[in-house]
Structures are given as structure tokens and as C-alpha cells.
Image 1: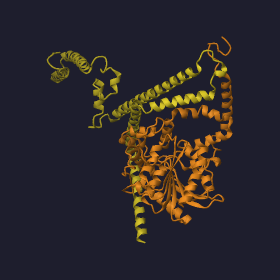
Image 2 (image 1 turned 60 degrees about the horizontal axis):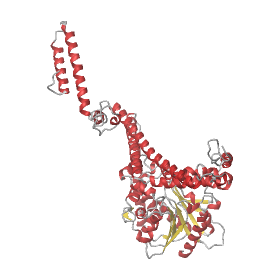
Image 3 (image 1 turned 90 degrees about the vertical axis):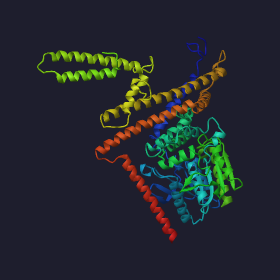
Length: 371
Length: 242
């Protein structure tokens, strides 16, 4: 046995590193214990007031932040039914909401609540037509504005696009973020680490998807959470092992991590009827881009969108591949249509430090131009 | 017995002859016991022959026969147990042994799910193994030169980054493969079969106890949803009228 080798003749591999890891793991345990099971972790703390509600659905208006910026808006943020809108207001240093308020935007957010079995028959017509229409009406009354800008996130972007196509008279402009339009665009432009969700859904027969949703009446939030983790198993594994240990020395980064976890864990069930339209009508049959997707009994024609559109997508988005979002550009060719590529993944568009410097300024400049 | 007919024909003849003998006999006749004993022996021999003939007919060598466990679960198979499952799975013509049949079906569905889960795990396991092989080869290539010093070894961050990259690449490919997609589809299908069947049984029990079933509650939700839509349409018409 020579120097630098163990008794088996193997190099003494990273003994110092292992000691450091052990020390970090102990420190991490102490820091996690201090959060009392995450109960001290808070997200979405920017002050807001409820201005309208219908059952479980609530509409809030953010309190304005004093700034020198000219007043802009109003603008309504809407997340989809998968996940929650609180991600746009993760923490003070990473709050898209705070930045938009700082830019002088009169900002509103819709919270779809926690759908239960009683909501299983809610479909796209309920959300994209009725509830969104009611929320816009409430904002118009509150703000006195004739039109409202819509800021749709992922599936919320599809709601917003459908509404804008059907009601051009009430929509000032459309900000779409990580929003799929052509659900099969990944086939022509495949990237191995993007679009796995599209591939998986397309590999299942429509009846099996319907049975999966019918099993509980709604598409279980627990199931969608597990599914998203499964899209990147190596990353997920690293996140909860080595990645977590690495955060032990950085209290601020650990808090951000825990806030993200809190947001990820808060995954509501997706109403069954809307989930069937989402998975079968859109992911499997790609009806929206073909003009065969129905809302309120009529086919949605995306070419009927008259307002300016700002389409924001993540270059590394593994959930919504960029070609699926960018397809809208082809439909609205020649119109007031802008694209903004953010060099991050799906959630990074809203929470990464780099995106924080890009998204809010782009939206406020765009809104200033169209308003 | 005679070799003129098939085993089941033999069985029938034995049953007929013994039944006639039983009813024709004088109860006081001491020969009855002896006669019954003979008939029972014949019946046993006929049953043996029937079982052997059936086994031979349904068996195609070592695999797929009635004693091959693979065939026990396969209702579409050609084994004797396949026939058994076909009988159990036949349309309900009677409530005879319904609970027993349901219990067997539930067991069979659970075993099918467990089999699908194992198949899925095997596919995923192979992908992780492949990832580890790739990682090992890459590390060996970059750091496995003779006479390494501690200075030349990679740090923890490098190791985990390299591992994550190798694993992500392999898993991204594996999770798009036809083999994975088929395993995932089977897993979902078999799990749904299990839960749907269980829900049906629970529904029957709920009905028996006078409790509302899920179908009834769902009907109610659907009715309320429809009424809300009607109410909204009514409001819209009223507003338009104003």
C-alpha cells in the first residue's frame, strides 16, 4: 500500500470531500429543523385585496407600490389549473409581481382555488369563457378601464388566448408565458430532453387517458406532481440529495429552495372535464392549432386575436418545448406579435435571477407601448 | 373403461349407470354396498382418465400446460387455467359464487398490476444501470490514468455534475423508447383495472347498505353544474334584454 492508496490499492478518494459533505449534512439538518417542518416558510407575501369571488375562485388586486413610473394596465395574471399563481411572487428578491408593480402596472391575479370532486365537470368553457370573462368585468368595473391586458402562464396562457380570440373588444393585449399552442410542434423539432410529456401523452390511447381522469373524477395533483418529477429523474434525485447538501452553507439559497418546494407541493387537483380537453383534445389531438378546439360551443380561431401579443418562452423549457409556444407566431404573422426568449427552463422564466432582469422590464415596456 | 368414447363421455356413462343402479337396487340387498364400491372405483378411474386426457389436450409440452404458472394468469392462453379464467370471466348469467368470482378476479388483476410494475421497474432499472456504466466509463477515461495523485482527482461538485449529466442523457433516451412507453401504458392500464374493479365492488356494498354510491354523487354534481350553466344563460338573456 503506497501513499494516496487505500488497503485495496485504490486511490484514497475524496476523504476531505466526504468530511466536508458530512459537516454540511449536519448543518443542513439544523437549518431544516429551524423551519419547523416548513411552517415558517412563506410565499406570495406581496399585499393584495380580494375584489371578486365566485365559489372557490377569487380575484385579487395588488396594492400599488409607490414609484415614479407612469401608471400602466390594468393587467390580469392567470396561472393554469396545474400548479398555482403564487410562483410569480415567490419571495421579495424574486417576485415578478413586485417588479411589475414597481413598473407602475395596475396588477390583478386570479386564484382558481382548490377544485374538488364537485368541480369535476368544469371544462375550458367554464374557465376560459365564463370565469375569465367575469374577472375581466370585475377589473373593468374596479379600474374604470375599457380593456384589460391578460398575462397567461402555461395553461393559463391557453385560457387567455382563447378568450382574446373570442372577445377582442375587452382584451388590451396578451402576454403569454411558456404557453403551448401547437402541442405537436415537438415532433418536427425534437430535442431529447424536451417534450417528454408530449411523447408520453401521445403514447396513450384517448380512452386510457379518460379512464385515468375518471378514476378520481379529477386529474390528481399528486399524480401530476409525480409526473413532473419523473420527467427529469436524475435532476430530481440530485436536487434532494447532493443539491440539498450543497445549500447547507447558504441560508438564503436554502430558503429560496424551501419556498420553491412549498410552491411545488401546493398542487391542486385539475377538474376532470377540463383535464380531458387538455390531455385528449390538445396534447393528443392538437385541436387548438387546427381550429377545432371548442369553447362555449364554438371552434376557437386563434387568427381572430386582434390585440398585440408578447410571447415569452424558456429556451430550456423541458415541459413546454419552445417550438410549441412559438407556433403562435405563424398564426399571427404580420400582426403586432413579439417574442422573448429567456435562457432558462419552465419555472425559471418566473423565478431565476436572470429572468427577473428580463421579463418584467420587457412586459412594462410592451405595455407602455400598447397602452 | 371402454376406449370407444372421449373421457367426458366415459364420465357421463359411469354417472348414468351408477345412478340407475342406485335407484334400482333393493335397500335390503346386501349386495348394494358392494355394487356402490365398484361403481365408485369405476368413477374414480374415469375421472383419472378424464384428467389425464384433458391435461394432454391442453398441454403443449413443458410450457403453456396447466401446471405452467405463466398460464394461470392468462385468460387468453391455451392452458387449462386459461379455460378456467374464461369461465370466471364469462358474462354474468347467474349470481352464483359472485363474491368468490370477484375475489378471484381482484386477485388476478392485482397480480397483473404487480407484474406490470415489475416490468416497468426493470426497464427503468436497466436505464439507470446504463447511465451508471456510461458515467463510470467517462470518469475512467478522464481520471483513470495510471498513478493518480489526490490533486488529479475530481472534486465532489465535478462528480455530481458529471453523474447528473450522464444519467439525464441516458434516462431521456430510455423514457422515449417504445419499450418504456409500452411498460408505462401497461402499468397505467393494470392499475386502473384494479381500482375500477374495486370501486365497483365498493359500490355494490354501498348500495346494499343504503349508502350513496359514487355514481349517484357524480350525477348530482353534474346536475348542479348543468343548473349553474342554465342560470348563467338566463342571467345573460336578462342582461341582453335590458
